[in-house]
Length: 406
Image (cartoon, rainbow, N blue to C red; front, side, top):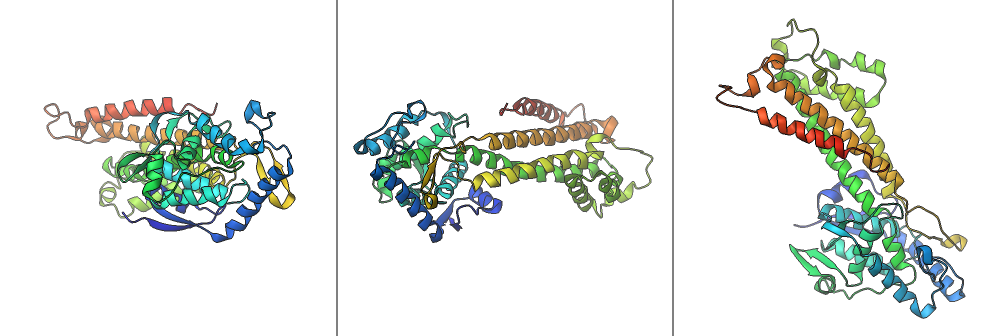
């Protein structure tokens, strides 16, 4: 397929653009305005090397080896060794959508000009994206506390010609894949390997993927919920705007409005407007309260993840204008972890409510519909086991929603 095009302005990514990148291959071009900042930060790193000053990540070892000074003639090998030693992930590879998001997030972070890399890594990441060539990144290996070291190392290694790439339905050795698009393996300058392996781009990409999938599930559940009210001959009175204005919860107000809109003009509703039922079960009546709370959680997660997508999260950071290289902890993925846990919890509640509606609809005593929604029930089991499967999945969701961040 022909990729759509996106001008990437580092630090100004939108959720719409990120969702578009998640959905489909997208050709990206960096905003030329970013290159001046990139060049100045790269020069600041070169000045540190030339001046002989000891600065973590530029001419030292890493982690517990930070006190070890590395000679100038070994700095390229230092960066290569870092990437290869950290390529220790395991498990199935990330999907192409998550890999594509990771690459774009890393490109956007480096492009802000605080990482001290040259234009080379930016050009290579951009070339891979535009050729729809994706590094094979094992999904397991990061705990997020020092950034996504292992998975980002697997991404970075492919720029050096190590590891594997997926391209046009094939998995190729990275050096061969680069040759297919006219590139030689890259050589990393001072700090470039560290800047590439350090950061929260994989965690953020995975959380964004969950957010976008949650948005689709939420929309489907909202439509199914309105249809369930109609099918069970429920009331739309619980969705009256006056009720929800008193609660003052923005998500609840939005969901109630959406349900009113979905049910407007229903002939089924009109046919039983004067029935004797006083109140519907919670799974119908409390949809605004439950789904609205989930919507508020998803909004909060979206704000956090959008900030993270536009963040610079490697370490140390280069402030070229101040002639300083500062070590900190922006690589810690706690904001992403809490957002991801909240998305999982919201999805669990959406699923719980959906399963309860299904249980209502297949029960003739509650719904007034044929047992298990099938003619000749007894001879036919209808949706009996579909509901049991839904209950099993809802139970599994509850286990998966236990907070990983804890």
